[in-house]
Length: 110
Image (cartoon, rainbow, N blue to C red; front, side, top):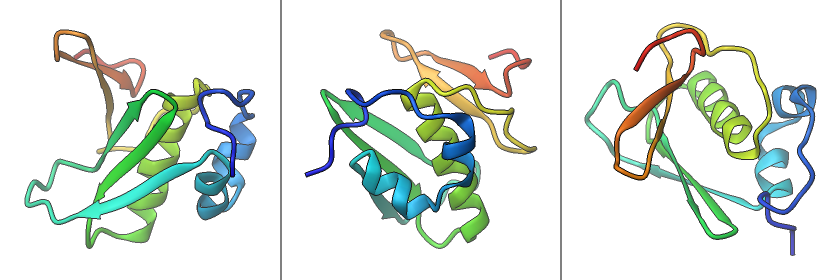
């Protein structure tokens, strides 16, 4: 059984950006699910419960989008500093009160 991503050492940005995505998901024991979503601005969500991580992405989107979004969520989840996402993608975190805070691109305001 793979070690949880939460307890593993932080990987390098190069590893997160260049390793095959399927290998990264297996390495960090991340479950990937796809759901039919009719919101064009929704590109995914990462759910962290204890030491389990699950990425939920919209079904039917291009492979390139899946790669960009999953790698960005992986980097944020594992605390790996990655370059800003390309336009039009943004990554937000929700605080304890359920308020979103834009975290990538890093120069943006929420």
